[in-house]
Length: 194
Image 1: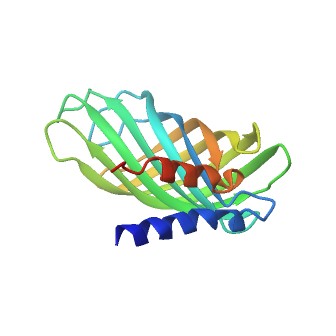
Image 2: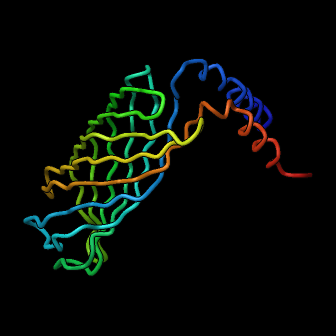
């Protein structure tokens, strides 16, 4: 059973170059710093200032100009609420991405829906429906990496209602440029030795 799964995974990674025959990346992942302007709202009394966080996007480009993108972020909001002493926010938003690809830069617009979750040290937190939209640009560094800068709006509606402005900078890794070779090498060299 294990051998069958390993062979199936290796064949999947060997087939990845077939997805890379186009002039645009099929799969893109980014990791980086995000800065959130989170205003005061009715349920909690955060400082009306900027908060640092970590954001990651995972994208699948269906065509040269249209793709699907998942946005996952974590932000530390501080400790001026009446419930707990340290509040954080987790956001997970899935949506569409429209891009105008050029040789050196890719301006784009994203829009999506998802969920936001506020946590603190005392209560169980609050969950709310969320939306995200805004422009950004990917500046090409080399064949497999680019630098992403975006300015988006996060809005949450239900248990906690607010709108936040997000400015983020991320490093994008384009998986089509690896052609599957490094994944197979990692898979084969990390097997246990009997």
